Amino acid sequence: MNRHLRLLATLAAALLLVIPNARAEEVVAAVAANFAAVMARIEPAFEQASGHQLTVVLGSSGKLVTQIQQGAPFDVLLSADVERPDVLAKSGRGVPASRFTYAVGRLALWSPDPQAIGTDGAAYLRAGSFRHLAIANPAVAPYGIAAQQTLEKLGLWPVVQDRIVRGEDIGQVYAMVASGAAGAGFVALSQALGAAKPGSHWAVPENLYPPLKQDAILVTRARANPAAQAFLDYLKSPPARALIAELGYGLP
Image (cartoon, rainbow, N blue to C red; front, side):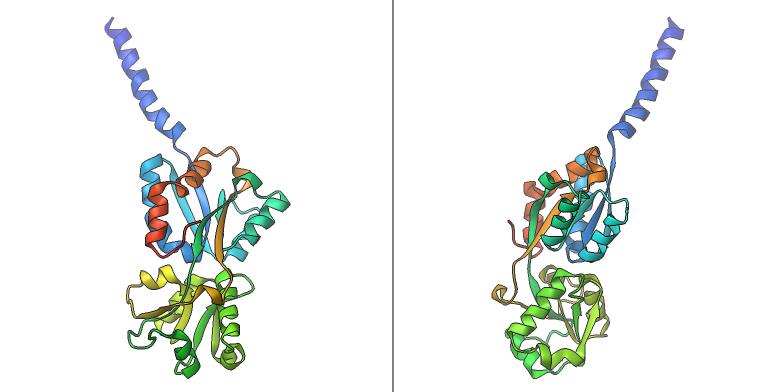
């Protein structure tokens, strides 16, 4: 009897070790750099709620899509636009039915100097008191396109050309401005709101650039990964949506 009980205890202990590992999965999410502040808070919340592990890789939407097309081991893409998830869906690299808009971005002109930008950011730009103005590269970053279109609509694109410095993504733009390499820059509103040095910012009127709808999509390679689907489902949950709105994004 004792031998039988010991055997049962051994089997029970083994199951306790195996079952969590069988249920816990990992999802690797390729995330547009503008969403970094939100992901910093969503990551632990998702892991606690789901038991899955989330690894976040930040970058420009264009570069992340190129990496997926080249076979990078990403399970989910959170883009800063709708076009690039569409590219993945049409090429067979993404699951079309999984696409949805998880946030609507807002553009802001930001400076760490609390006196630099007043309530009229257009006036600040026209005054030209900055040495360098940072924007994301419009070729690969949707927020860079929005910045360029804002400047064009204000009639300032030709005027500031020689003072524009470009970052590969909105994260690099933020770093350039925060370090003083640029006097101001066009960043995501969420970055301006969450800046370590709040400084001053101007929420760019949304009629100056097209809506920054940001779509998510499941990468085809992750069809059978329950953690990937669980993460996409979590982005639609009330706690995640409340956090997205709190950090300066619109909700679809």
